Image (cartoon, rainbow, N blue to C red; front, side, top):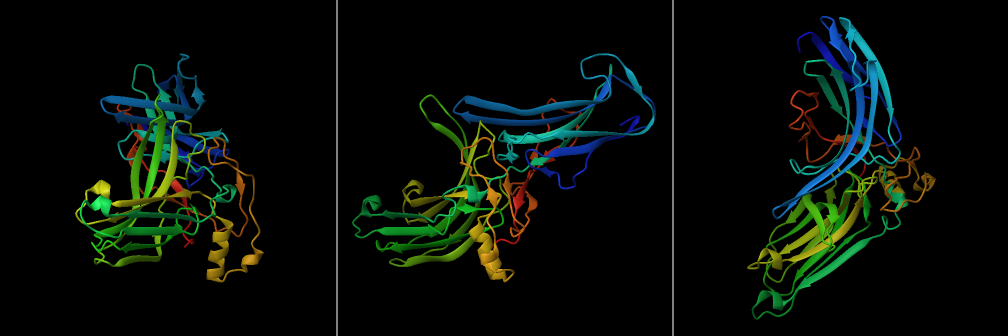
Length: 389
């Protein structure tokens, strides 16, 4: 780095996760081997949402700016001219930004898909007649979605379906039926979806396999004809193998654990919506993929668990009497709100940890930022409950 021995951003919080409305504090550290001439040293806090997708030969793009705050730490603001000299040695410049209450949480689509909500800090040494020194650090924003504020999150969901001889194009009688149920609709990362279901082969043809898969559905926009553009991403799955002709396949409380994921709806984001669902696929022999029996069950992923789930966990652990747990004091919130309301959780709810998104890191440096140092890849951190079952 030449005369620049060290140029970094240091955040006060070691977790690097913030809620909307919180302060993000830190320092820019500069260590110079010799005096440096510059216009100024600045730090900025930026939040941006973007979705880029292709339909046919057309590329569509939607963009939303949430935050663009700048502080001049030394010298002159950007684009105002003038020069100063920062002496050799070690310098520490503190800063603080306040995040908006309606700031959407961090989100990354599939790798290379150009779909994200990102938040970062950027420090720049504006140097005359030379390439600027540029350092960037990413941080996560964890939006709050209290499942207790969603009316149907605690309600069970059920789906039934069948395939009859008309699908088989041959002389069979009877049908293949499937019936699946979840005890509730709302979950938090770290919690397991408990699956109850049965598939019965009254067609007497056998079943190749039964899959239960968790999918993430990101909805971008609607065109003039009302067609929704979306991106479907598989998250996790369970599989039962072949069932003999005339047999049945029973799902008796099997568990599919939810990995670290962004909460449903992306509160605060107006260019994308986020939903999750279970897809049940009953594969029948000799049929095309589109002819198999497919069922779906919608689920909601939040960041504050249902009181009923916490009571059950504590009862199983023997840590407390379920009747002693007091309800969370929070305000009702509809699923489509763009301004999430804060939820105040009691001490009875176990504190979450934060874990890296299940899909891993993505590239964050654009082609026009070849000299930017700092975080070149990044994965958001999401609320995760280790103690939930």
